[in-house]
Structure formats: C-alpha cells, structure tokens
Amino acid sequence: MTDRSLPAPASTPAPAPAPAAADPLPSGVDGPTADAWTALGGPAALLDRVSFHGPDAVLPSRLPVRRLARATVAACSLAAAELAAQRSGGPVPEVRIDQGAVATAFVSERHLRIDGRAPVSFAPLSGFWQTADGWLRTHANYPHHRDRLLTALGLPADTGPERLAAALREQPAAAVQERAYTAGALAVAVAPPRELVLPLVERRTVDAAAPRPLAPAELPAAGIRVLDLTRVIAGPVATRTLALLGADVLRVDPPRMPEAEDAHADTGFGKRSTRLDLAVPTDRAVFEELLATADVLVSAYRPGALDAYGLAADELLARRPGLVAVELNAWGWTGPWAGRRGFDSLVQAGCGIAAVEAGADGRPGVLPAQALDHGTGYLIAAGVLRALTEQRTGRPGSRHLRYSLAGTASWLLQGIAPTADPHVLPNDEPYDPARWITDTDGSEYGRLRHARPPLGYAGTPTDWSRPPGRWGTDAPVWR
Image 1 (cartoon, rainbow, N blue to C red):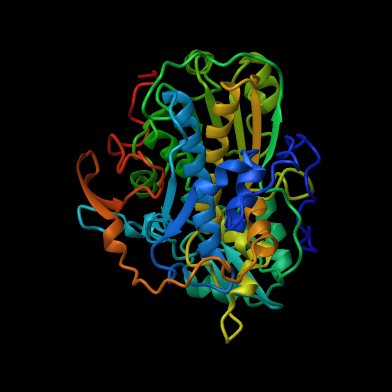
Image 2 (image 1 turned 135 degrees about the vertical axis):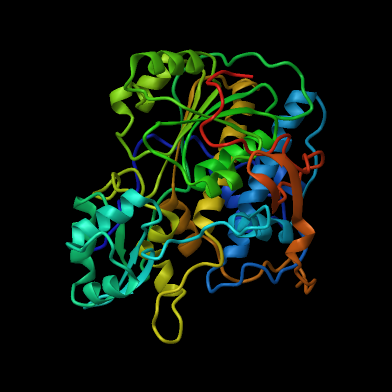
C-alpha cells in the first residue's frame, strides 16, 4: 500500500448499544473519560464518581496525551470499582486518579531497574531515518526483525546505523516500507497528519451462555482465569492490570518466539508465564485443558494468525461458551493493512502522530510515552472488567472485544480536545516520579525498582501480589 492510507472502520463485530439517551452524562464529567466509558458500554451515571488530582505538568506534547492517559486509567478504575461492587455486594467505590501516578505508569519500562541496571530500550537499527523523499520509521528490536530488515534492503548482517542511514537516503520511503513488509520486517513511511475514523473498541455479545459462577470477593477479578497470548506492551499491560485485581493470569508463548527478558520483567508482575507449541499435539491438549475453564482469553496476534489452531474468535467462542475473547492488533480490523505487523512507534509514524510532534528542524517526533500501547492496555482491561460485570448482572453471553493501536491513535488525533477542561482549575503541583516508584525484592530477576500501579478506585491494591518470574518457566496449570 503506497498511498499510506489506513484501514476503513470495521463494520463487524457490531458495537454494543450505547447508553440510552435518557441517561445523560453527569455535569462536569471529563470528556475523554466519558468517551472511553461510553465506548465500553458503561452506565453514564457512574461517571460522577471519577475525579482527578495531582500534577498537570506531565506527559507534555502537542497532542493531549495527558488526557488520554488519565482517561484510560480512569475508565479502567471505574470498571474495576463497578465489578468490585458486584462481587462484594456494596456500593460502587469512588475513583480518584492521580495524574502523577498515571504519567509514571505510562513510562513504566523507562523507570524499571533490574539490580540497578536500566533495561535495554530501542536497538541501534530502530528509529527514524531520512529517505530520498521523506522519513521512515523502523523497528528492529527483536533479532529476527533486524535480520529481515537487512535482508529486505540487501545489506550484510553486520550493518550498523551509519550504513543503514546511507542506504535509506537513496530510496523512497514507501518503496522501503513495502519491501520490508514483503520480507516480514517492520518499517513504515512517516505519514502527514490526516483524519482517521477508527473505533476505540468494538464489542459484541455472541450468545446467551451463562458465565462461570464466582464467589463473593474483595478483589474484583479474584478467581477469574485469564489466558494471555500477548507480547511487548499493550496486551501485557492489560493482563498485568487484571492480575493486580486478583485474576489468575497465565501467559502462553510459543517456544520458538523468545521474549525480551527486560520487557517481561516490566509487564510480568502478578502473572505466570509458560510455553506451549500449539502445533504439537501434547502441548495443544494442555492448552485445550486450560481453555476449558478459562474466563478470558486476550490475544495480540495478527488477524488470522491463530485461525489454524481453532482460535478464530467465532470458532473459539463456539467451543468455549461464556468466554470473554479479546483481540488486539496494530492497524485496525479491515482494509489492506489489517494483517500487517506493527508496534506503537510504527503506528505513531503511520497515523500522522510523528508528523504532528515533529521538531523545528522537521525531524519526526514521538509522544512522551508509548501512549498507544499503555492506553490501549488499560482500555482492554476495562473492557474485560465491564464484560465480566455485564455477564453477572442480567446480561449473560460470550463476549468478543476488538481493539487496535490505530483506533487509540485515531481517538488521540481527532477525538480528544487539546484544551484544558473548563471545570478543572490548573494545577501547578510539581511532578516527582519518585513518589510512584517502589522496590520489590525476591524476584528471579533480582531487585526490581518499578512504577506502582496507577488505578485509583477506593480499595485498589497498591502493588502486585508477586513479582515477575522468569519468562516461560511456569507450569501450564491454573493456580
């Protein structure tokens, strides 16, 4: 696709009905929070339980990243509060979101220290590169992506940044983008700002299956079993959040697709991690046993990648009635880019965000956080929590939820007004991220310094119940 267009809005699955017009938003409600909550099907009357405090001078950017970040955390917190009330039989707790905590959590991977060591960030061949007619963004953090990029460009395996830069200066950005795609590499031409109309979330109820009964509990997701088939940031942030709230989260990865240990040290809190090869009959049988009693499955593979294993959404929900099935991809669910690989940095480039945030010298810019990843992660967790509430409050049935990083980018670019909320007085409280950083001992990775969870409903756990274990080393069983 050389015109850099993005997929059109998906037509299926059909969105769940929005709250009735007779149920107006409470006065003074934060607009982005209301947008997210409404997209998730949340009762509008609960929005008046949400308030914000803490420093305004966080996540500075041209686009309203602070408002996106706090809105996604607020929606997730409110969904947790709603389910907590259902589980405990009490009233829905108040939600009070600290903007400093949100800002710190949105860059959790930067605050992480492993025995004092900062984690590895972007690899040398990942970044912006000037081309013959513009700019290109590459992602080569994983060795196989680096190898494929160099193969696509006809460059030797020992190529460094200078040689790559020289090669790219001679070629059009869109041509490199398409060659990289064909080779299974990751490179996206930096696109100009333009209108995007993509849904923030797509929701549908598939049947009338009754969910697995749950006993009363203090934590909203206690006893919920979550199969986590996600990688990198967005999906793992969602399942890390569900683990904080009491869910039994088991991450499942294929043995031949290693994960960066530093990334898992950041997003593996509260979870367990195992490896199963679904192409091997014995491993597949183990996975099917896990699925038989799972309540939630979250996947972040390209559309169609899991179909051969019977994990296409419709087939999956037919086999496991009552499940909440969540799918995440980079570019949306229809159109010529729906099946392409992507990461937050690439979606920022392809959706026009990098151009909006460009510097005075014309070099593309970036958001102050991988906000598409983190924001989508909290929206996924919120959608799961809302689905669990609906299933147990008179609206049974399997649920299918779909998200994309491009959908969150669309919301940031067009759906959130960049001006301050008129009902909120400016807050010049200084921002010190150390207030929301803590140390955890006893991890198999060593001593971890990490960001605290940002959720803010009354009764939220202040930390995870367990540190991350080594990636892929847990037994494939439920607790």
